[in-house]
Every structure is written in C-alpha cells, then in structure tokens.
Length: 127
Image 1: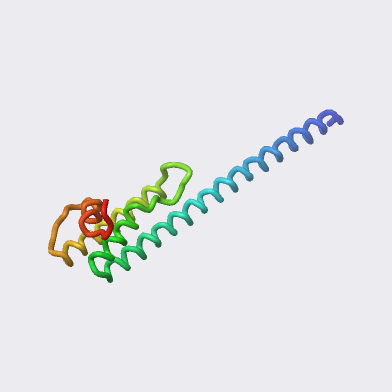
Image 2 (image 1 turned 135 degrees about the vertical axis):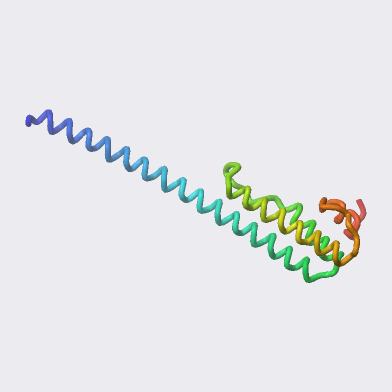
C-alpha cells in the first residue's frame, strides 16, 4: 500500500474516533439529564408522601393545610413531558385522594374530590 493509502486510513480512523467521542459525549449528557430528572422526581414523590403522612396523623384543619401543600406544589422541573413527570403527577394525585378520603372519614362530610373545596372550607384564612 502506498503512503497516500495509509494517510487516507489514518484520516478516516481519526474522523471515526472523533465521531465516536462525540456520540459518547452526547450519550453521557443524556444520561446525566435523565438521572437528574429521576432524582428530582423521587424527591418530589417523597415530599408529597411526607405531607400525606403528616396529614393522616393530624386534625382536619392541619390535614387541609397539608392537602393544600400537596395540591399546590409544582412538580419538579423536567425537560419534557416524560414518563417520569407522569409518575410524579400520578403519585401526587394518589396522595391528594388519600388525604381527601381521610378528611371524609374524619369530618363525616363529602365535599367531592376537588381539593380546592376542602381547602376553602377548612383553611383558616379568608379569601
């Protein structure tokens, strides 16, 4: 093989190496973003769960305060509508339902499934 043939092989190999490095970098960045989204999602779910647990051990007025916290907390920020965001929303909805069910049993009233009605009736502040 001539020197020109070796030079072409070296250039093609260099281009392939640079391309593979760029691909590896992009995959690493995507993985880091995914890990951050998952970590934020689990943090949000834990926060909602703590508020729910506190509500289930408290009087109705305090339970409504926890319900307001759960219902008004924004989900953790993710880069797009992903399965992770849907998981966070599903867990928050479950926690809201649990607290409302607890309030129904504790108060003997049924104000529906909308947390705003419970918050309006049992919160201590005027609107």
